Length: 269
Image (cartoon, rainbow, N blue to C red; front, side):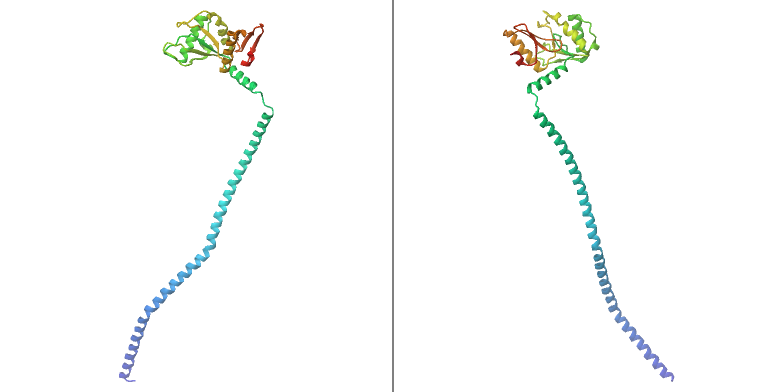
């Protein structure tokens, strides 16, 4: 081949290469778009596959949560039912006791008398003293000091402050000069009895307001009502006499000189 022929072949080859390169450049954008679409389709398919695969997991977790809630509710219900059973058992016992009490009732009078006697027993160490002057300083120690002086001066008793548990005024003060009753609780019944039995020494004595000095048993409200009824019966001549003994019992002497203890107003009939 001559030199001119070889040059022509080279020139044609280069032109074909340039055209081929140009064709490749023209086809590159189409290949990139196709790849992008393929990638998106692949991602969508992958996402759908994952969601499909996770769906049973979600349902299982939901079922597990529901099962835990049901188990918790079941345990709470069991506790409530157990507690209800205990309460029903207690109610049955209470109803049984009530039924037993209804079948063997105590007479109302006996019940009332028993309660009154119990309340009176709690007051067995107490006395009410009328005629002790009031002072502005109303402390417990001052009240005890006043009681000790009263017993020493008016009754001739050597009573120590240690013999008194507490002392204080009772009732409403009607005016500036009024002297309220002193309620005194003794430590022992023996000291209380000494003071109570010495009350006869106050007969005919009066305070600075010309009121009689008195030492009274600390009666319950019911016993005060009974004693008032007994005094009224004495004034009407239905009984000869009435008094309260050292044990806070209300005694009466009938017209036939019979002596007896009364526990209620009906005993005066």
